[in-house]
Length: 119
Image 1: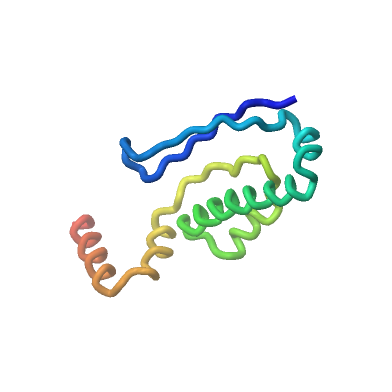
Image 2: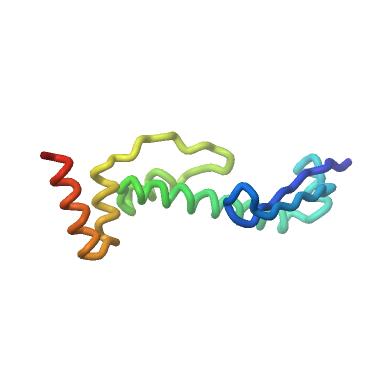
């Protein structure tokens, strides 16, 4: 059996950005996918998609100021299809992580703004 999948892509983030949609006939089950494309292709695609998912999770934890070891502990045993628990970012840790990428001028402007806010 097959199923019709609708796939849409947009170029740009503007509301009037060019968009196209196609209909694609694909398998309905994992077994059908393996039969149609082969196990290696299915695994390769799954790992590629999981890599993109994990990269997003890693970026999120970096922005929260997590260390390499904390990130490894949080994600090292993640399973495909499992949502990562939501946590609120520590604003101090986020600033500490960000400040290392700032120019001296940006750091000075940030400190001036923080001093202004604190008084």
